[in-house]
Length: 163
Image: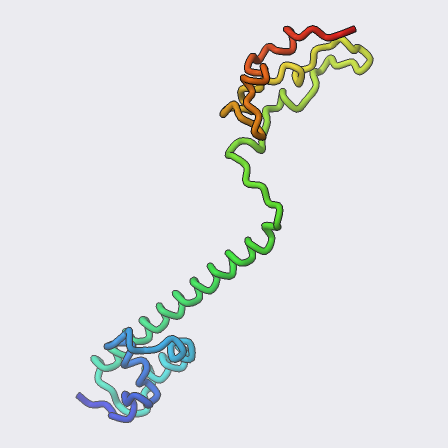
């Protein structure tokens, strides 16, 4: 095999690449980050000293492993930054709502087409509100709805209102 011992020495120009090819876990993070991929590939393609094809193949494998670890470090850093950004904009009083609780049907939030503001006896869809859908667990804010007498969804019609 013909190659220079100086090129592949630990402190040589391609030493980190050689170590990455053969002992991937031995190369520390700082050396991985400090490695310039473009310069390394250029020195493998155009060596100053003749190198065997097998040696250049091993060196290219080292370049790929270093590049892979650099990409992994970048992905980790970006993921951590994204989590920090989301936490920063969440705010102190963020409310976690149940799925589907933030949306209502179109009929629930609009008045009928023939709505007249001056007709006071008109029954609006909001008056026939279904409490069982909102209070599915029958406890809201510490009040048991059956004890209070609101368990019946037709309670509005049964109440006697004083004149």
